[in-house]
Image (cartoon, rainbow, N blue to C red; front, side):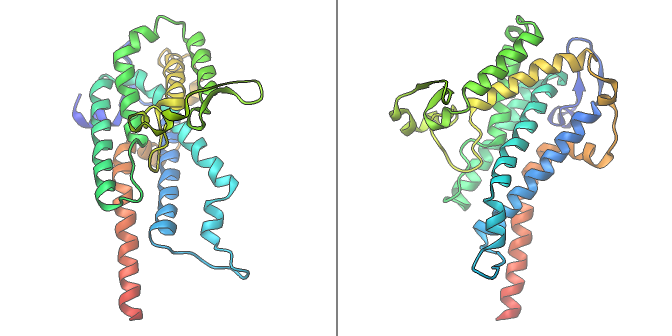
Length: 275
């Protein structure tokens, strides 16, 4: 298998040797990456270039929409779906360790890029850092994962995800039912940024709670590999979304420079002709 196939995550079952694509997973992952591009594009437009439309009464339209409860809820939901499906896809990859190292390395490049060019908006542990870490952990621990029946593993990982949703807010547990608070000093330890006890930069996707959603996907992936899922999920219905889903890492790496370059060019033309 070539390097490009490994990065794309071509469907390959280590259990059965079966190879192919799961149409529904490609299409949903493609939709998720396009929504991420849209989100980051609007973020760049508002917070880096300061573009907006001021409505009567002084309301800034783009800022209002971007900070609305709907968008702020939809953003982690879409990211969560992407992470969950990527966890499923691990069951189909021949070399998760190599894919993980590549993704993590690209994440480090993004960190260096933002620290140098956008020091006020650094990405210390973003989605690529997380995805790379998840792939590496799966490659190293998948035999241990498989000691649990898939259904029990899925249930356990889902419960742990719910219990650790508050990790970034100083506790684990369920508010109103039970909470275990960890020391406030942990929130000041920089090296805990990847874990999630410490807030760090923008586009932050720490291991807690997201790794448990990823592992839940790993366990559901067993059903996909065994073709226990409904047959219609394996069919491809949208070639465009499927194409995007097969090349998410390329789209993610390219979209921000492209968006930034396009907006910068438009701003340059506006300044040039208005001056």
